[in-house]
Image (tube, rainbow, N blue to C red; front, side, top):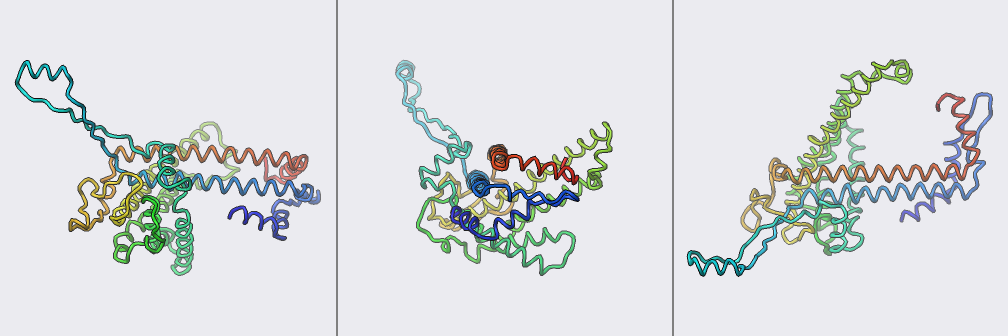
Length: 385
């Protein structure tokens, strides 16, 4: 699909014209530096295809790590294995001599290592139970959810008045509107492979009442964290900085600026850990609680949430409450999830770093001396150092 889109984009007559206009720079009194005009067609194709491949590849890896594996981590319940050890001869002889107690086999409860504690182990588990493409499972539903969420947000942004906090309100209402689609995606990710169609995975209207509030909170929390972080940045005076004022700072003022920047960064991370992450985990675990009981999960999952939920077959609702959804996610699971997000950040950063350097190397190889001309032109105009 992506190769076909790339081919059509290259064949479109306006594609090259658009790129030419984007990178052509007019210098005052020096004429025009047309980068594309001096590049062979094969070089343009190489750069375009390399960029598309890099974007698509990194996006798929990001989806696999930051969406599929983290969701499985949010619902996995560590299991314990029971091992039975037979009675040894020494203990048997001791019994015969003492004649006090009869000892049987020794039963030991061993906590097994969670599947999602390792990225490689999780991928192997997925591919072994659901095929090689299981690492990207639910991708189509995720795309549909994002499209519906974007359309709803666009409509609500135009319909609601421009007031402070509009982004939070729009995100919350949009998240609640498409809550059932997100739940269908979660069910697709955490369940074993089946022939169930997409429409059959969408929860009922009665379940929407359970999903609407956590979906709204999960969608709004990133914007809440952003507003709070911007507020802290304004309190630190970072909103008054510009390029000229930064150049005029002395050593002490530069150190103060760095410290204030670190404070804002730490606050942003704190908002992510204590606002966004709990909201997302709560939503996913509530969605998992309404998974039909005839659907098996691909990772161990305690439907009783540690005894807090009674299944429908036993006369209960089978749904976990909003607060219990987060409380049932113990500290070991939270630590495992945070470590997983840290690994994802390192992996994606490394891939972006490699992709950028490959593209830059291709630019220098394909363009040759034209790059030097363009950089000189940019420096002369003052928008490049």
